[in-house]
Length: 416
Image 1 (tube, rainbow, N blue to C red):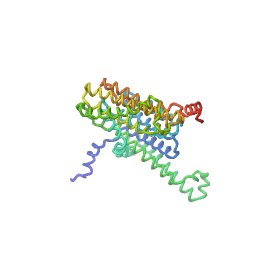
Image 2 (cartoon, rainbow, N blue to C red):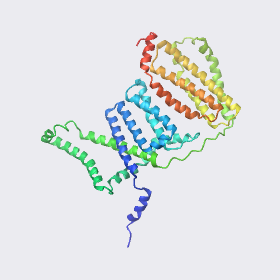
Image 3 (tube, rainbow, N blue to C red):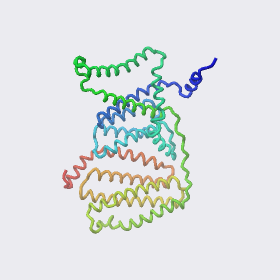
Image 4 (cartoon, rainbow, N blue to C red):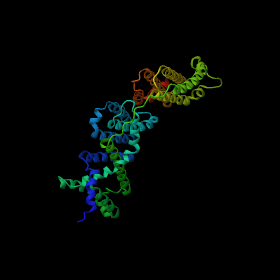
């Protein structure tokens, strides 16, 4: 007697895709909550609902990973500033020009929390976290979509208390169908519309279809992401960065940069300490001239410093060059800050002048941490810098800058 090939394949399919567990079925409900929150945000288009959406996302993820979150100091350290950003954005307590930065920072922090919760990120293996974040954005929301539909199918399967389960399923399917049918009947018959008391008078069917699509797609993508993060195999460990660069390579790069900064320092010395502006330049022109380039140079310096610390063989020569590079970065920062302060003194404070000053203060802090890292290799320069940036920004937006800027400008005669 010949066997049905489909019967032979059934055990193999079950082995590849085991039946969803209870937590995986419960995750469907959490994903649905996220989907509804996403639709409300898109429908109402307000920062309050944007914050509710991300709070719901964090809450659902925490419900399935709370033990790992509580055991991870890095995650706990990230949650606090994330909640601060969400809360301040929710209650509209910030300068309007900072909303864009905050709106991007919140999902970035939440994704980082998800990666650090579910992955073991060892010191000097932070590259795994970077790749984990990229996978969480571009890969994992799509690779477990099949698990989403298997979970949905699992709800419809029979089993214990099947009658109760099927009753709830019937209610979940029947209620929206009844609403659709009543809306169609009300649109087709005036008597039915009057009987329903105008309940569906201002409801357009296509709007509800689009809402259902938003809820469905967003819940599916978040289910796939959380399923991958929570239950799938962790990403492979990255090899630790090897400090195998000889002094000659990074030494030449840093030496050439130091030569350029020596020339810059010579030219700028009079302006920094003599209080004399270049000929034919106003305060505004001098302050604006090259400010963006100075920040770009500072970023280059810290990038070179970070690569050098990670890859160069430790030695006295390279440490001396790294220290000089940090000192040169501080000189560039001092020149940029002085220019900006001249501008503030001439034209008053705005958020676009306060934010760069805050950023330069962060770079100064980073320079101090870099100097410590040069002589103490166990100091996690990258992690401290990243966490400091998060807390620096969270502290920045907690300040009522509108009131402070107004008071400063009035006191210095710049008007309201």
